[in-house]
Amino acid sequence: MQCTRVLLAECKQCSSIALQPQGEYVSCTSSDGGILKLYDLSSGYCDYLKTQSRICICSAFSPKGEIMCGGFTDGSIRLFSTSGGELLQELVGHADKVAAVAFDPRGRTLCSASGDGTLRLWRVTDGRCTAVLAADGEDRGYSCCAFHPRKPGVVLAGAAGGFAAVWDSEAAAAA
Image 1 (cartoon, helix red, strand yellow):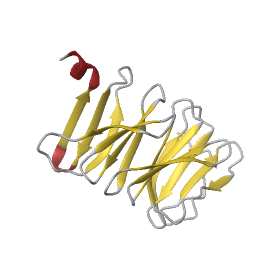
Image 2 (cartoon, one colour; image 1 turned 90 degrees about the horizontal axis):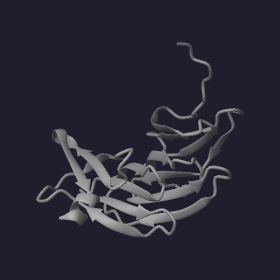
Image 3 (tube, one colour; image 1 turned 180 degrees about the vertical axis):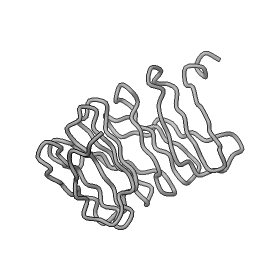
């Protein structure tokens, strides 16, 4: 395998990176400044997104690639347009940093995992928090989250100490 391009992040360390599903854009966050960058892979152009001095630590793209979101140390999530970089909405509700974000396979729901011990599910169309998830009796800061690729109602999350949890809204509705 050969390296075909180097994107200059202009930071000391790239802390997270995400590739748009269509392969046109890459998002990058840096641990030394928390800046959220959006790279156009064909031109190499870098757009520094308006984070208002907030520190971004994770990012993800919607399945169709039209939306990129970032999770911030202040507990907020910001959604941006990939075509112009404009801020679409800000989601607020976590009491600690947002360590991970993930879109469901249809792009309708966004999951955020936080150091506050909760996951939040957000409706992408209007930014409404539709659920707050936490493992019963567990006080853990979540560090990662994902949706099942074929079952949008199944959410997974992980935390320190090898802890992993699975939530299934379809199973809960059937019970």
